[in-house]
Every structure is written in structure tokens, then in C-alpha cells.
Length: 121
Image (cartoon, rainbow, N blue to C red; front, side, top):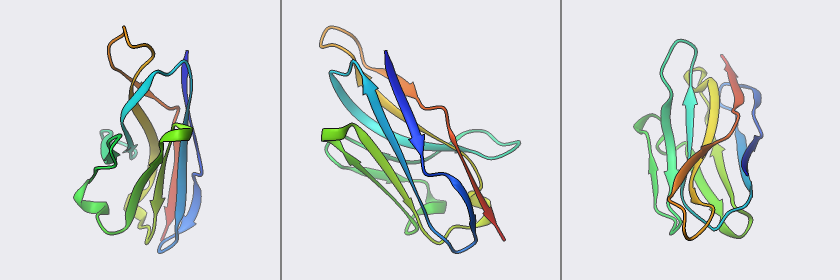
């Protein structure tokens, strides 16, 4: 079984910072891309940032220059440093990972349970 566990969410004032972490554990052979998504109330879940195993990153335009995604491959962990937070960044943040549990099994996407980020104005 594979688990992704997020931490680091909370309540912060506009202009503040938070750092999210997501650790993957269990039977893992390899991890390809990892990413962060968010879902605001009444809206669809959207990709915020992603990072490949080689370190290539991708961001949604609204967070470019404010958020930084990184990963520690040795610890199967992905991070999201969020600076200059805005009220519109509020939502539940989910991490995901495209991984293989065995060399013989296909790549499958796993999700964390989500962590709430609330930015007050």
C-alpha cells in the first residue's frame, strides 16, 4: 500500500508564507512526476505546480514567481513553498505522485488526503 501524507497547511494573512510537505510511503519502486493541486469552494480542482523526477517544474500562471515546488527524491517527498499569499489561494491542497510499486506494474497516480490553506485579507 502507498500513502501520501500532506502537512503544513493552515491560516495565514495575505502576504504571508506557508510551506507544504507531502511524503510518500509504502511499497514504492520509483516515482516519476509529483505535483500539487488545489480546490477552492465551488470550483474544480486545478494543477498548481508539478515537478519531474529530473527536477523540471511547471506552474499555473497565477502562482508563477510566488510558489516554488521542490522534491527530495531520497525521502520521496515533495514540497510547495508559498510566498506572497493571496485570498484567492485559499483552498484544499492535494499532492499527487505518479509512481510504480514494482518494475512489473504500470505507473499509477496516488493522491494525498488534502490540507486546508486559508488566506485572510
